[in-house]
Image (cartoon, rainbow, N blue to C red):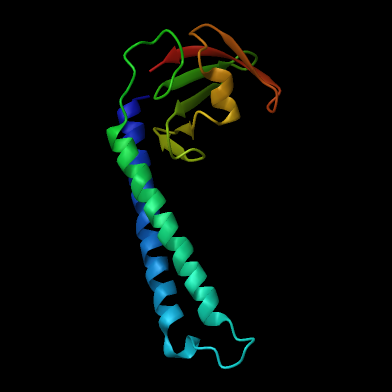
Length: 157
């Protein structure tokens, strides 16, 4: 798996999410300021609800823009002895030999990228899986108790 392809694909996914969020924010803003959104009674809160929605979408837009910028500026480690931030980690299940790909990045945790029918999980350093992997080395076994599985760190990219 190529980490630059993973990053490029992840950026495309985030840009798609950004476009959707911009459209949603535009619609929410239009709805919040529309003539029919004015409160007719003290219990009529449609305009207020739309304003909150527009504000939330605006925050999401800013967050996505920052994430995209951080990914574009991410520096990759040159050493491949120990797992660290910006490593693409190839793990192998000790019982089934099934691969698990994990990319430790500063942002965009929880996303998945699929390349050539292989799924790569994006995690941030605060994620439990990243905490187990950081500072480990190729050949080390790592036990993920929430999966009840042990994996060997096969390769760092």
